[in-house]
Image (cartoon, rainbow, N blue to C red; front, top):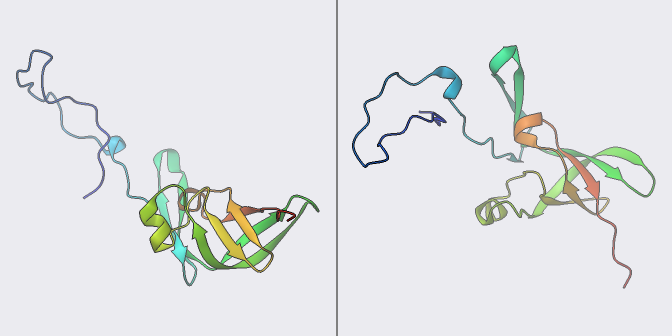
Length: 131
């Protein structure tokens, strides 16, 4: 069963029932979130409208970390998920989405890509505070 994003209403403004004039359409079909987590690399390819192939990243171990001070990017292993502001449940389960703060060997980094949509984890290194 998939998510349906149709807009046919079930009731009239007066409160009466409205009879359906057509069935559900394939282009109104949605999909469930990929919920990328740490683990051996696993991707799923789904075909979308116009022949576009969307890469859904299900599991990953590495991220492309950009250092804003030097301007260089490296592929670094992710140690753990520190915080996910998108959802408290994702925080507990260690799901990686855009805005997630991850821990790496270089330091903490904030995810800037959408792994469930783009198929890759890109992140920017968070500068350490001088205390």
